[in-house]
Length: 197
Image (cartoon, rainbow, N blue to C red; front, side):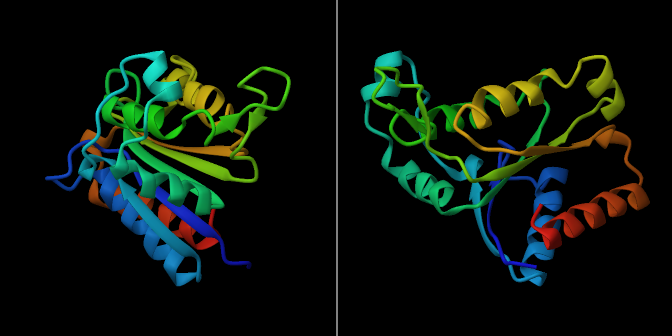
């Protein structure tokens, strides 16, 4: 197996208390290290950055200095793994704000000479996995809600900048997970890390 450059993006907004998202990311990282992959981690909750409030700020404003290393990590990575809890049916606002900041024109996508700033996907050649924890059963989220927010992330953010393929790991009913069920999920993430998937 060829070693991959893997970037873990921890999107849980609570940096003070360990959550299942942190344990899952830790299991993935352990498996990846065991298999010889290169791993870097971004903990979004530890970054202090402003939210974007205008199109001008997004297109023309400077990227906050604290996020320059994050862009470099994304540029370095061959595979990205995003971890976050489902809050009000979507990713937490802090993670969305982070993605809005780093996915700037000129970095994540750019002009192709046609006059359209959306003509070039600058992050092609990278794959991703989205790991989402939620209180509801994952099957209900997938079938009844059609995994709408995850599909939006895959299509409107990751796919928009050229990241593909994107795979999902949905962990449901986290509030009632039994120890053996949690252990099984950690084992699954460890195996995914070993494979670099």
